[in-house]
Length: 484
Image (cartoon, rainbow, N blue to C red):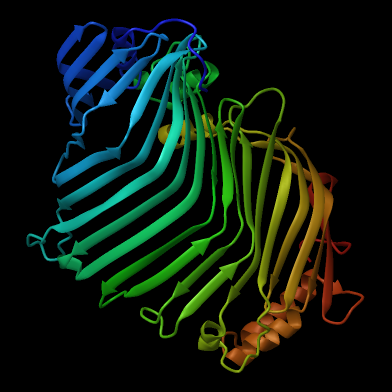
């Protein structure tokens, strides 16, 4: 989003653009005093806050015009967030070498920023919880959240849809938190550090309706049709952290680490989408709330959810994907409920991958929920089951299928088939009986249900099922109509 200057900016233009942008999202940006002399605008007592409410305060700031048409912005050292309600204390932004340069870009203004270190430091108190009506002692909370070697660009681009963008990179993102709740007899500390953080965000305003004027689902639909949109992409390297909680009811001592990952989010009138990938996860818990140490590990993880937003004549794409690989527990944790090792310790695998096309009106569903009117019925046109898989304790389930839907009767009428196979189910039931987690009677009921919906497969302890949806809402399982 950064670029070279094409037209000279003035300090007054930059200051006014902040005030205009704030007004669009319900913020008042002002200064107690303003003084412009020789191309240097000096501001004292800067405030950024919703009307009539506390917000961010900056002791002083200078905006200096440069010969290349840019404006250099130097915020003062005293940057704070005013507390409101029953909370009290301090929240401050501290920095080492923060520099901000504003320049013209694509007809708007872009701000390049960099800092060797940027931290939010807080030390607060707020009312605790009382269970007998008496005044509870206050909860103390303190900590800091900070970036090292931070750089990026913020942009404000005018047009039919005014667009705000933010790009950010940092070597590390780290935090430390502390809390002490005397009423709950609980103290907690946590730490986290993530390497190689990157983020890119774009937010487009609707063309006419102001954000502050959106008061109903109908207004929200109007805003979406006028171009309201949000997109986000993130990327990070390895991370590690810890959490320790001193409590007579729920003591904890956790150590966590995770591989790198990335994610995206998109929301506009056509699509709502969230996608993420992560390399793996390790969580170790010392003995405390649990009688033995617990270690949870997993391999790569993936999540993807996509849906249409506003119903149109043409159906939109939807999908749901969830993959968890090599999810495992340590032997000490297994032994708590299976000391005789009746169940295989195989790492668990989960895979769900479905997709298709549908018509759905998310704002309409929200309107119906709030007003009590009949909600618009989603109209799926297709469902593709690319993968449905589960492996745990030596048993495995796998399924695929494809369906189309006839919505002419007002409800979706499916046509198509799915095929499911299960291996190791009887061995799993036998193992659960040995552990005491499943009774003989419950096991008999489970086997009867399997007998109704499955037939023996080609291999030992293998079951298969073919589910067919025919015309007239007829459902067949292995050639037999339901109800059986």
